[in-house]
Amino acid sequence: MAKAATKPKENKTLSKIDEVIALMQHETGASLDEITSQTGWKPHSARAVLSGLKKKGYTITREKVDGTSRYFIAGGAGK
Image (cartoon, rainbow, N blue to C red; front, top):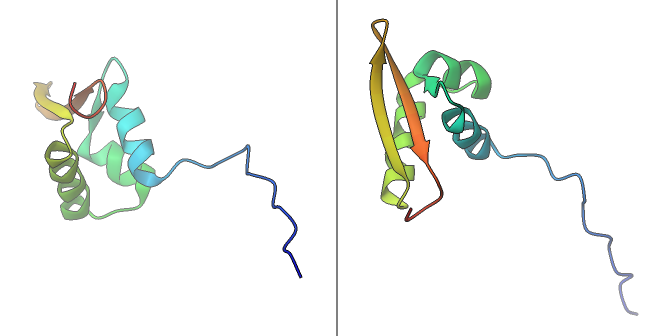
């Protein structure tokens, strides 16, 4: 008996990593507090994701703005 074809999800939810990337692509970037608030991760987990994104080829920069580190991401992996 053949399985009925399932309809692909059109309303795919973003993964937490996708959310972090989106936060860092904003003009103002994202602070560690904003990343942890958005994802529910602990700070060490958020920093590990930033490191993992770097290893995947993303260009991540950090700037101090009013005494707070803000993280920015440029383009996609390898850009």
